[in-house]
Length: 134
Length: 282
Length: 120
Image (cartoon, rainbow over all chains, first blue to last red; front, side, top):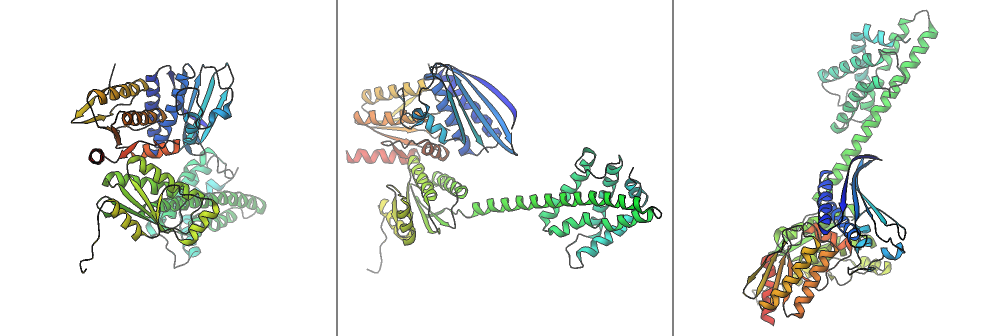
């Protein structure tokens, strides 16, 4: 797996969530993803970016382009400084929320991507990474 | 030090003639071989590139950098032939038929040294075998690309969305639905719904041989997406044995309207639009 | 702060969302609309989202909330113009927007709203 391009974005406000969406849209369009795939990527990024801002007290996002076995992909990582997630399995379930949302964030974002990884320890923040291949 | 590059250089024109003759002999008179001029040109460029590549003395490892031009040439040659419909044999013969003329030259070059001649022949065999296999590999890949492109085209022509009435679309599906095709079908239908402003769409699956859990799920997702956009989907043409399989598999279509035939679904669509078909004779 | 404009046509309110909305903008639209429904005695709300290239769970929830709140205030809401790619993504996300009425375009949305008026 090689990395061609990488960009880091700050995540601290609602406006930053919009900037992440625009960046993911631009990158996935440049990589030649279909319109539906672009929309899935942008939507997944929006869910996770908002999680990081609201529940994680902010952090940063990193977008990278990947190439593996002749396929192109996009990887987005979100790292927040929040309290972390105690029970990841429970948090992935639809309907689970500690805030006022519908609780579709994590589980929904996973369904929109092909590879999904979440690392979290109480007190050490949360890191979520997803990948979608073209 | 191998003498192959030297032989290639000294006997270039004889080798070229003998090789072209060998190619014609190998594939027979009925073959679809190119016009003489084009074949000669390709054979000529290949011999030139071969001579340059062998110059540094490495004839048995065609993966190395000095062989790049030869491989580039063969790769283009092979994919072109694959696209033009040549058989793999005809394509690989281009390389393999150089063996005979080259081996003859190698033997006559070493009249008093059978061991040297055998060694050179072995090196030349390895070289041409590697190149021949490379040609076959590229040929195979190019054919696969052709097949993938044709599959894509087939998916596109196999999703005819037709307008039955102002505001009523129909999508008669024929053949097996796999995940890839269903996705294209789904997107095509939804886009046509927007383009035509049709609030009713009928998905007819009379021509679909089996409906498994995955296909049913795709159908339900399509209907759900259409609903979000403000259009209703009806599903028609569920054959008795498909209905049985679906029940056995535990596949439910939820609250989707289903009709036995496309005609029934069309009648339901008209009713929804508060339209009526009248028999004028009555 | 930016606000999304709300047009009034008779007893209908018309909103066209044309920007990539951040969450506070979505929340203020929700507040503004409920205020306008009451002050303008509106019976119907039409929200055109044909310019939106994505709807995530937050925006989806805002649309559902507007529909529920307006119903309590005796006005019907119709969301029109959702793009196919957005609809496919919402289904995959698991959002069905139950309780939100939808139409393909502004024309069909207006017809739908008028038909409610005729019944009520």
